[in-house]
Image 1 (spheres, rainbow, N blue to C red):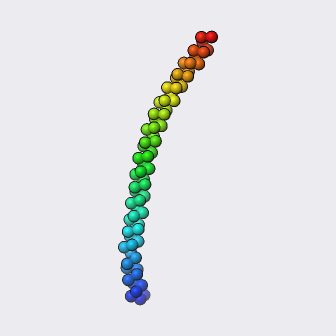
Image 2: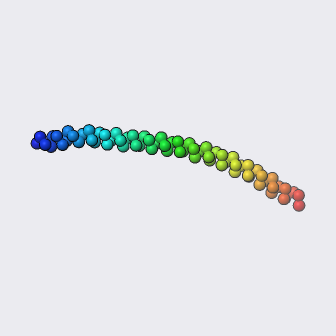
Image 3: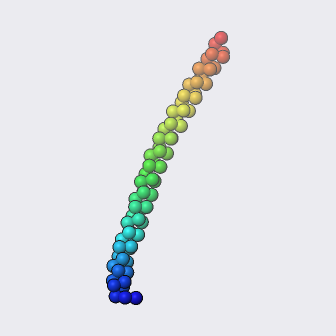
Length: 70
């Protein structure tokens, strides 16, 4: 191995380490964002479920009203 190649290889090691560190940080940030988004969606789904149940109860009462009033 020549001295020039040794310098190139020695200089590329920190660059590669920095790149790997950047990728790890990006993945961690994306995972955190995904977790936060997932929690928000789950809360909205809980609210939607409650709303659907309320509508279902109202609809049942309305159908019963039609069935027994006439």
